Structures are given as C-alpha cells and as structure tokens.
Image 1 (cartoon, rainbow, N blue to C red):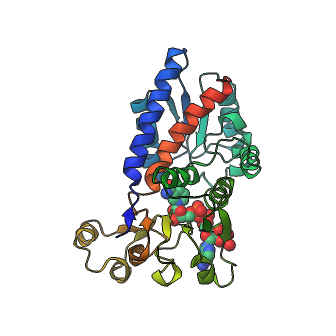
Image 2 (cartoon, rainbow, N blue to C red):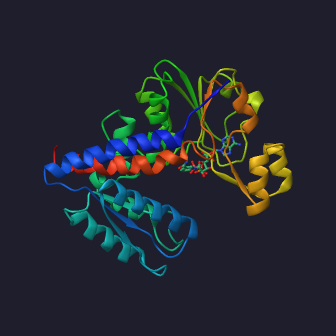
Length: 304
Ligand code: NDP
C-alpha cells in the first residue's frame, strides 16, 4: 500500500517549530514581522491572505495587512514597498499575486529588499538558490523538500523528474532537489516523449496546472509522487474520469458543484511508493514555509 504523505501533519510540525523559534527570538527582544499587501478584491487571494495573517497571530509573528485599492499605480506601490523596506519592525514583505494588469508585477517584486523577500521571488534569491548559497527559497518548493525529508524519502542520488518550469514552483523545486544531490530532469511543454522521462523518476514532482495530467502509465512502480497542482473540476465528465466511485467526493461535488484535483491522476497513486494527496498535501506546506521564511529573515537580518 502506498504511504500517504500527510501535508497537514507536516505543516503543523513545522509551525510548532516556528513558534519555538519565535519564542527564542522574543527572549532576545526580537519579534518577527510580516507585511502582506493585498490589492483590490480577489476572493481567492483574500482567503489566502486571511489564513496567512491568522497563522502569524497563532505563532506570535507580528503581521500587517495593507489593502490598497484596485486603482493603485505602480509608482504608488513602489513607494509602499520602499516604506516597508525601510521599517525595522518588518522582516518579510509579501505581495499577494496576481496584481491588477496595470501594475508592473516584476518591477514590484524586484523592489522588495532581497533580505525581506520571504516569497523567494527576487532575482538575487533565485540566483543564490541556483548557486547553492543559503537563501530565502520560494515557499511551495521548500515545502516539497520538507515533505520528502520529514518522510524519510531519500533525495540524494534519486532521479527526480520535475514537470513544470515556472519561476514560482518548477525551477526552484529543481534547484532545491539538485542542491540536495538528486539527479534532476526538468520537463516542460516542449519536452519530447515526456512519459519516457517521467517513467524514470524515483521522485516525480508535478507542477503543471492541468488536472490529472500525469496518468498511471507515466509513473514507475514504487515512485514517490509529489503533486503540486491545484485544479478545480466542475464537469460531471471530469469528475467521473478522476473520482468515479468515490462516495465522499461525490457528496462534495453534488453539494458544491466542484472538487479539487491535482496534476497527477488519482489512479496513479496506487502504483506509487508514497504520494501527496490533493488537497492535504503540498498546499498545506506553503503557509508554514512562509512563516519559517519570515523567522529566518528576522534572524538573518540581525545576524543571529
Ligand atoms: P505555470 O502555469 O506558471 O507553469 C506550468 C508549467 O507546466 C509550465 O512550465 C509549462 O511549460 C508546464 N506545462 C504545461 N503544459 C505542459 C505539458 N503538456 N507537458 C509538460 N509541461 C507542461 O503554473 P505554476 O507553476 O504556477 O503552478 C503549477 C500548478 O501548481 C498549478 O496547478 C497551481 O495551481 C499549483 N500551485 C500550487 C501551489 C501550492 O501552494 N500547492 C502554489 C503554486 C502553484 P512551459 O513553461 O513550456 O509553458
């Protein structure tokens, strides 16, 4: 039977450790602080941001939620970021994406001081990660590594195949796996004969954004499957393709009109050694790693 890699339990463990670190910093008169900027009203972003702020409160991290109107300009956002860069009480700055189309996202992400870039998106942090130097790593890929390590899945020497090369997930996941001595293959939409590569994976990381894209035929028996994807299934045909016979999900689908599926077809989990479920897998780690990064930023900035 494959092992279910329980993201909820691992995230709770990390958050306990973060709370201990916060207490240790408090004893030295330091309280880590996170500023979250949420522009306009994007319902999905509002949910994420609320849980980030709530988790800060639970762990003793100071948090500030800044909510400029949708009409804010790039220049005004740059001034806001600059003021946060200068404030000693703020260790981490998070700009919730996506931003309105008229705002220059890249310019803003580049304006965050690298030492306060708790999302790990600044080119300086991306470069530090690529060159194997200590850095603030993007939260979701950092969570992937935590899941593997805390579940005693060997990374060193393993062949890790990452499907998806975004700056937020795929590329940093590949860099982190390489830094942990995996042999890494990074695949994308132009990769030829993808299934031949995915079938060689000891660790297969799917970060594609296409529901159930990795099918059982694409997976080696005994592989560890890490499913980063979060996709909403809204049609009966898709529901049946992924979840026919699953009474619990059937009930949720009837009630809400949708369910979540990852980038790995749920039937593929049966042939794996271990896998992260969706939901309840990688997604649970993202906020925990944001908290860990905020504490790390607070320490690094003070040379602790
Ligand atoms: P992007 O859309 O930025 O990147 C998708 C990647 O998948 C691209 O590199 C693309 O290749 C590749 N791809 C698309 N189609 C194919 C294909 N047919 N064959 C091979 N590769 C393909 O997505 P993200 O990286 O931002 O997100 C990926 C998934 O992870 C999404 O479902 C998202 O919701 C989820 N996610 C989950 C998070 C969490 O907290 N758990 C956090 C962030 C994302 P190319 O570059 O060639 O176009």
